[in-house]
Amino acid sequence: MRRRRTDPGGHGPVRYGPPIPEQGLPVLPELSAVLAAAAGAADAEPSGGGPALLDAVGGYWERRGLSCERGHVAAAPGAPALLLALTGALAGDVFLPRPCPAWWTPTARLLGRSVFHVPTPAECGGIPDPYALLETVRRVRAEGGNPRVLVLGVADDPTATVPPPEVLHETVEAAAGEGLHIVSDETWRDTVHRPHETVVVSPADMLPEQVTVLCDLSGALLPTGWPAAIARFPATERGSDLRNRVLDVLTAIGARVATPTAAAAAYALGEPEAVTARLAAEVRVHARVAAAAHQAVLAAGGLALPPQAGRHLYADLGPLRSALAERGVTDAQELEDFLTGRLDLPVPGGHRFGDHMGELRVRLSTGSLLGTTEEERAESLTASDPLALPSVERALSMFGSVLDDLRADAQRLEPPR
Image (cartoon, rainbow, N blue to C red; front, side, top):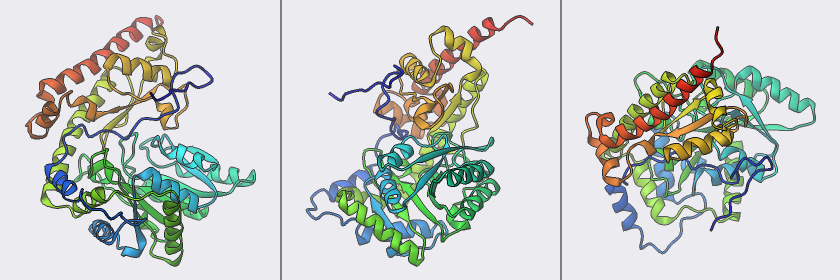
């Protein structure tokens, strides 16, 4: 049995963070077939990925306007392993937006690096506010620190937002001006809910010589149980040196992509019609469910930025603090426990993502709202209106009911005017 450790304040289990948002849908049959066909291979993939996988990685980014050769890309068994290797190769202090994906902070701290969280702009998550970033970097440097790395996301987990290009450009310019190497997590860039209305821009388009792009394929293209991630390094001598140092780390820790997973990843990165059609169907379902959950939060008096990408919603229930306090909920860990228990779904608190414990924020995964059986979840892919399915309607109704109860109590507890 896995031990669960509590923090000194008695706030419950904190050792293990939440997984990336589950897609909640059956594995694509074509992917399963490719994986099965490679299951008999006895040879291991080399550190950083074999030729077939690296060529597929290059083609994937070429189609997104980022030219790259085999010698400037790499693969690893999951984004945490790649970020660990990158952080190890890039010495110095690490800067992250607040909030940020749950696995970013532990990766840096595992190496003993100092981590500094910087508030995000009001209109989006994923990137630090450029002025707050400048202030934080200069303060850290004045105190004897060594600012070296900024990790950001262009399609953010947990907030499910996409930074406007002009705001992203200001942040990238600020980071470059302070000599920071930028690591751009683009795991969710292919899951934008309204691709004709939302523009995703990579920092590598802006400053190609100072940006390494990271993408966890166990987000949009592969099931979460098939760990594989890819990185694109600057096409410069420094970029080649950085890649070599990253491969050294991956080799030292034995972080190789499993051969069957590498075959499935290469197939998915080639973006055949089966993969692109399935991804489009998944995005449509998650977008509809995320929009409905967003409306439920707003209707109850909570706060949340409109979800634009990914499979999650980040909600601030601070306006319902009085009603939550009546139920013994006064911080993010207690809110996580309360909602997880009431909904029978994983609802990690904002403290998992770098937010302060006292903030009443949570991330809700839309995949967990698609049903409890594989048949129910599969049905959502072909339904003309996923929200009308009994399984989805039931889950959203329960979510809305819990929030409505909180809203009613908050209104009751308001002092008379």
